[in-house]
Image (cartoon, rainbow, N blue to C red; front, top):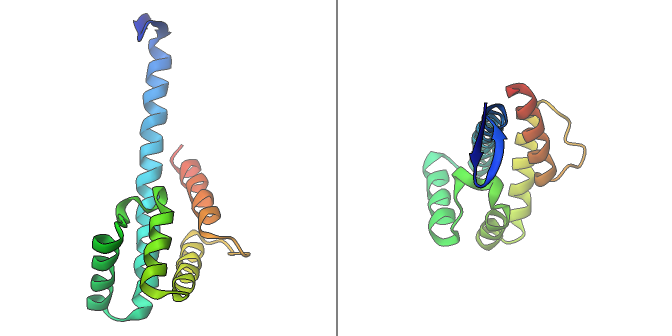
Amino acid sequence: MLFVKDSQVISQSEDVRAVSVSSLESKVQQSVNKIVRESVLSGLSHFGNKNVVDSLLYILELEHSVNLHNLTFDLPSFRSGINAMFGTGGYILEERVCDELSRRMGVDRNGRNLETLINLLEDKTRERLE
């Protein structure tokens, strides 16, 4: 079946495929963000118990505009926030997050940085969901 959409003639199957890809990417991002968020929480837990972690999260969200539900879209804010809070210790926290993310994915870290690990996680998640 053909129809007009935004001044273009497209088939219904093309439109369904576009929606399907969009839905897949949304699921991938939700899954990846959840795993990254959990890895950050695990990294923060090295500083103390749940109350300490909750306090650190509050500061990251309130004072540094870090949104833990969309970390993969705004890593610069996360880095800036942890560096402002911990100075050079922010790097150590990021390393812990990377270690935890690698562990959760079941891969060797092999010197991969956070962006590379997130990209790998997105690829693995996409493959799993397709």
